[in-house]
Image (cartoon, rainbow, N blue to C red; front, side):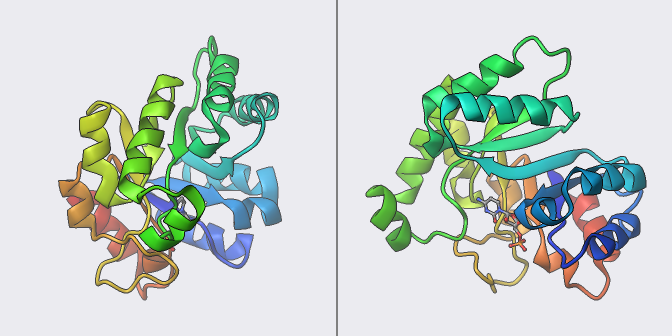
Length: 225
Ligand code: C5P
């Protein structure tokens, strides 16, 4: 299991200070909406220059097939190691993206977002009219059928998804908390549970970013996983 640290801080300067603080630890960095919208590709390049760690671009593409495929091609062109597409964009959008990436000498890992870890079952039901675990498994099957490499899901769905699809199908799990408190996350799990549930990646943001010693936590997580 790999650690992926979410760079979600208030400024590029603060994010880059964390990147520097965590240098030399075997991990990935996740650049998501806040940082990308504010600081763009310049920040992606700066992160690479400071750390050399692989980058997960968490933009959660959700659009019609042609637009999704165009965006996927632009992301791949920048040498990003991993990005994601909402499974709810549909099979055609996911397939269009994978077809566009087909034939590249090195393509990024592509994950499908299943059910956001902030959803509880009631909120999810109100939108999708189906229980979370069933939908997450159904979405994972669609993503696998479309040729994607894995899914974003909570640790609680990870093992069931692997049983339904394949052990080699990747699961990346946000919503990691050490002691229960979840902020806006609902389906939280400790790193130990994520490991038991066979997660390939855990994404950790605030529990590392707001810790008194982020390097100590990241190191113990990266080494213990
Ligand atoms: O601070 P925290 O550990 O909750 O950060 C989790 C990160 O993972 C955030 O950047 C959030 O956008 C992202 N994420 C998530 N749930 C998903 C996909 C991404 O929490 N399903």
